Image (cartoon, rainbow over all chains, first blue to last red; front, side, top):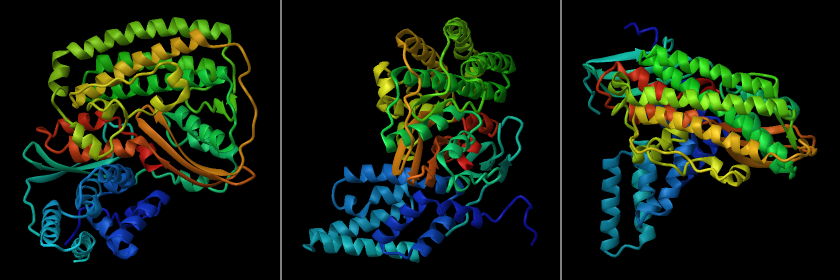
Length: 129
Length: 363
């Protein structure tokens, strides 16, 4: 099938955006927190976001981190607002489910750290699925 | 994942008669209603950050101005002030106030150009041409002080390049009086024009929450009720002048244009204050930039402009990263303002109302 001539492959340009110092630092931080390889995270961001959102990610990330600090637990540790609004790498419904399960675990007596670890594991699966 | 069914995907740009620079906005529409929009860049990438790396500051200072052809003074100012912070270079009082005068003149011409673009886009060419004529007079004042209209290279480490002669100060005061009179009149035309209201009020709304989420900056954020997002509030010279930002609550195209008009009048007031308190004295204190690293921000006409700079002992720029305000504002425009616009005809005007600078965005 012939593609319209104005539909370009933007992969190289998106990668160029993510190569910048600020973007690289942000990707490293997110990848380390969620436990995903950096290359995989870059690919995920390139597939999911348009060029402009990619350009603006570091500013959004910094803004999201400030909001995160004021959030209650377990939202703060999981970064639920950060990863669904500021840097929307996880769907809001999926994050709601993760939060629900973490709260449920805590309610049943699981230590918070362990519940958060389990929540992060589910976040990682959302990204690598 | 289910595929979304839409009527048609309409590309606007990359070349559009109303846009100053090329960018392509892909709009997914259902009839006239815009469901979502996406911007594609890459038509004028300069790679200027890469060109800057490894060069001495004396060269990078001229390159920094060339990031943006509209607001070149603030790039010059932020870059030089960052170098001054790295090496603790003091700036004489007179030079600091002259910097504010030139920076505010630059802001005025940028805002007037943005409002011209908007009026031209909604086909109010009369007001557009009035504004363009007014901008020329601001550019003339800029040229009179700095010797150049666009890339002035006026600000240097430890001061400014040229002093303000008494006859230039007198000319500037007279010019400001005329500009204030004209801008007030044009602002009234814009505010009370019924056709302008039809194309501007309640269109392209950016709510306060969305502006915060996208980290919108400058007049775009201030038109959505976020006055605190102005770097001038943290600048010592502006603090001395008693600066207080302008803001509105509506968050629509109308508010963004009105904020710019109000800021032009505010700039006139700031320049007058500077002229009133301008002390006699040197305009250059000397000092040579050395090694160090800093992240420094200033308020460009479009919002917060940030430079991260690392220099070596010889003053060479080893690492540099520039975050321009248009990145945040265009993102806010595409993902929030354009989403849900009732008519495709409002897409260009809404896009222009966020004052997009593609040269800045692509660097």
